[in-house]
Image (cartoon, rainbow, N blue to C red; front, side, top):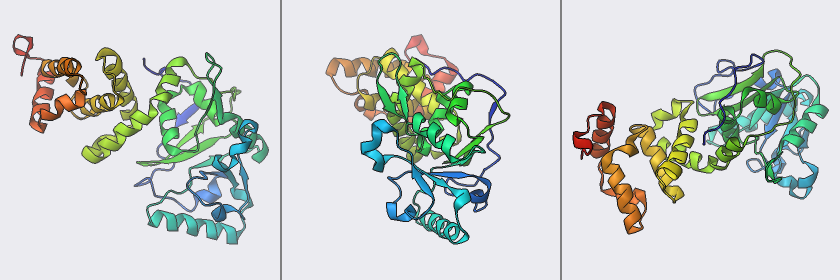
Length: 312
């Protein structure tokens, strides 16, 4: 089950060049003057670090008893020169130690009131079929990265709400979702069933990304990688009939490293059957394979020249 494909409306665009940096930790001091608001994740900052800054906690009424876990909106236009200096020093100190910095930057000409109202509502997304409410952690840059491929253009407009631009850090630098022209879009974010499924698989996608960062970091430069991993997770669970989530992640990682259809190779198909018969994990069944074996099978899949349909 794949997430719906984004439409190609002209009212939104992703501009990599606007805030492009050499690494996710790069931060240009000028951005505090170019943007109106900053998002903070309270789990990454101590309250004392921003207590005396112009901030407001973004807390929906149903989550009022969990306020300390909710994101914080900082009004950058209200910073004094002294406060701006302290904030920049805090950001630089964190970056120097490899720690997280701001979760996002927003440009919005309507003022804090309308934006706060939108961001509060955006935190809670209702699953229309079940009626269950879920917390949308848009203040986590990792979630924002995935929302760009899960959501369609109209939905990304609903994500922006009254904001003209929303920037967040990622592995390649800072990216920005920007409204190209004024448009009367609904600010209500609604998700299709397939998109809910993708959101629920995000922990597994992230697990695969972490593993790939260790064994094949060059692959992470591909912006389409998360969607590909998600599709491989579905393939492993449905087409291959694997039951363990660890096996799904293993399949997605190997498909990304070697060949998107690597698990259709006859040798691996035999290992799938063996794992089922013995009641073991597929990843365990593949532990006997060497790097050379995987490369050989990948080459065979490219050539599609199986001897008698059973190349070993």
